[in-house]
Length: 340
Image (tube, one colour):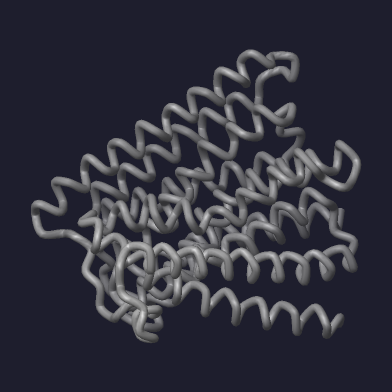
């Protein structure tokens, strides 16, 4: 066991946890000051902010990767497909796990239903379209370019719809409310918007640092085990880069802020299922070559479908544990394939 890598992973988790506390505190105060709903804070502000680490990985791999072109494309494609897979499986499962410990396994979780349904529908539409384009012949470059533009336009339309819905929710008394002072204000700095943005940037910067520390530690351990680049990018990189969403959502669901907790994940799924595949279409052949690419993509859609079903029947921590089973299914497929 490489104990140096284990120590690095432990330090990374501490950094990410502290950074998540800074980030969630700042984004709540910013949302309250701007007078928007929890849906906007969770699905847009927090989702985009915490999606930055996993956004950087595929872009760097495709534009300035250090390996061969095939390896760069494998890492980039794996990171793009792996991000929504991790969010739709392990992230939602961990929210259920920690909510169950804090609030009971049969407790009803109450995210704002219209916003959650909008997120899930948008993700399924955008990511489904991206996967359909990935099945087209490699020579159809014009189709990929048009698809990328459509995904960009679709995400802009989603943002407009989310902000429009926010106005109605705020009017009904569902604006963001803060429960503790801004952290930087505790040391005497005025709690104004520039201070909130500064704390937000500090928290995000530490999230990126912690995520990258985690990536390096886990990648070293994975390479020592002889795992392929695609599997590493599907199982290792997204786990590390999705840490911000997981920790933020865990903190929020334990505090009973269900709309923020779920919006942070599903809003990031929309972002990761639209803009990032659009980048992949423009910078790579955007082809899914084998089952190792298709399986996590399909399971990500299955995770979104399962949450949509739970939204209709009642979201409980016990129900969300089924998302962990989806993640376990893919791990079992990878292990079974490696043993054959």
